[in-house]
Length: 222
Image 1 (tube, rainbow, N blue to C red):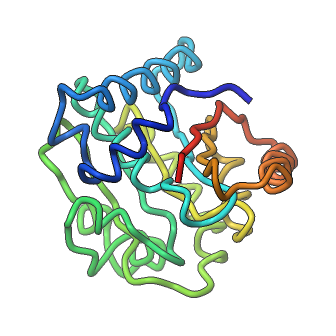
Image 2 (cartoon, rainbow, N blue to C red):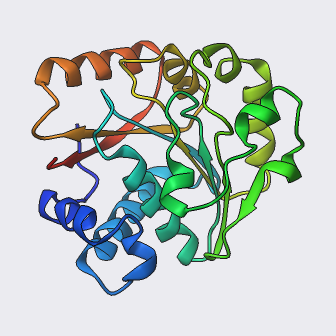
C-alpha cells in the first residue's frame, strides 16, 4: 500500500504544536507534507475534477481526524472549494478541532430536522465549509447507510471540488464500509505503535470487499 507523504516525525510535531498546523503555521515542514499529500491525491484524480475522499483507520485513536482536518485546510488554502463532513456520528471530533458549534449537523440533515444551509459552517479558511456531526448517536449505521446520505453526496459534488469525509474506524462500524463504496477513494490512517499487521490486513480486506478504491496510507507514530 503506497504512502501519501506524511512522515512519522512530523505527525509527532503536529500533536505537540496544535491540531491545525496547516492554518496556524503555513511555513512549517508539516504544512509542506500535507501539500505533498494533496498533490498525490490530485495526481490520482487524473482528469476527474471533483472527488469524494473518505478517510478512516483500523481502530480509534490513530490521529485520523487531525490529519483529515489539516488536509482540508491545505486544500482550501490552494483555492479549492472544499467540504469537510464529520460522518463519525459515534464519536465526532471535527467540531473540537475547529472549535465550532455542534448543536446541529449531519444527523439533523439526514433526519430532515435541518436543511443543508442550516448545517453548513463557513470557516473563512479559503473556501472550506464544514458539516459537523450533530449530537452523537450510539447506533448511526442506518442513517449513514441510507439513500439520503448517498443523495447528499451526489448533490454536494456538484458544488464542491473536493469532499473529505471523516468516518468511524473501519473495523468498528459497518457504515464506513458502505460509505467507502460511494466515494472516489479511501485513505487509511494507521498507528505505527498500535496498529497490528493483522488489523491492517483486515481493514484492507474489508475495503476491497466493499469495492472501495484505496488511494494509500498515512502512518502515524502514536
